[in-house]
Length: 418
Image 1: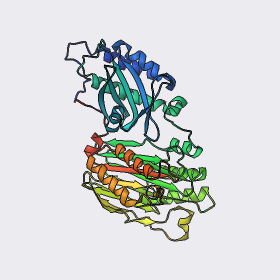
Image 2: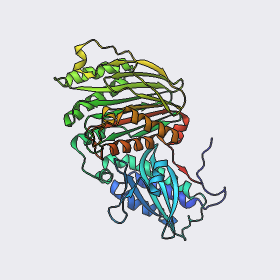
Image 3: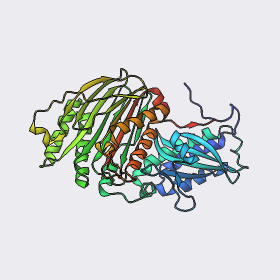
Image 4: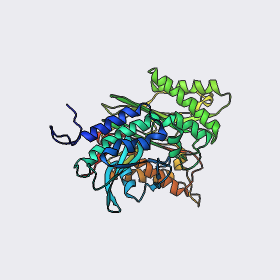
């Protein structure tokens, strides 16, 4: 099928400024540095007389922070029109001082970076374009790819997303982790980590293809840099084994061996390793001393998956014979699988009451009923855990949500509200 950019009918040249803007952005992106992105975007969209501002979401997904160091103010994700555009992945329009303003999601693939605010002056040649939102979405998709490519080489972009200093352990782990969201035509995976700026021993990982998907969650003993180092070894061992084509049982043995080789003590890592056949829904999984995943079907939690259990990874596994045979479960289209670390259910409020698995399940069922995008479901779950704890988590709390459905994948892609 031939793809077409939005614009006017064949023979019209009213779409030409948009084509020129897109090509100019692509041309400049090769040598662009993170601290020049805002200024370059101004120049690229100047012929259309549009005034853009880039907002990046902070690591806790609470505030959208302006990329410019002067002028614009942060915007909260909850309770605002821009925040709703971010939550739902939709282009939304508002007015400021009687001027049109578009809020356009910045999404790289399906990873949410934030928004672009586009001020549309009345005299702009783009003001009367009925496909203004679609063109802005294309520009933002390209910009998000540029941001993704520049993020780890630019301290300006890194710090623009931070509301507080990052711990050394947090700096280590965030550099090792994949993006928080990934998807293809039949699958959506989203993850969150808390406390975002002081995470130490939790991690997640995934790899998806056209026919299958691998995903995992890890939680090392301890709450310091040592825990981060332990998790990083387990994460790297799992990745090397996976990329060599090893099955889940062999992956578990590879993680054990790597931890034993690197550390003489009995530090350990709990975790869940899983692989999903995207054609049949067959899920193979192995639980190593970790909370069992929760299966949600038709908006209801039906059971926890605890069919294959062994001790945590590490030297502790040498104290008794281990059975690494994965268990199997067949998912149905639309099923959700929620993986979590113990820091989620063990978060306590001021009275000492735990958040608990029951409350976690209730929030997950509510989100499933609302048909929210997977990353937004997890963002709201994290807010609930944080509020229960009184705003601060002492232990790492990680959530990974896997949804096997084409609808889940479609909800990750930005769309224009008509």
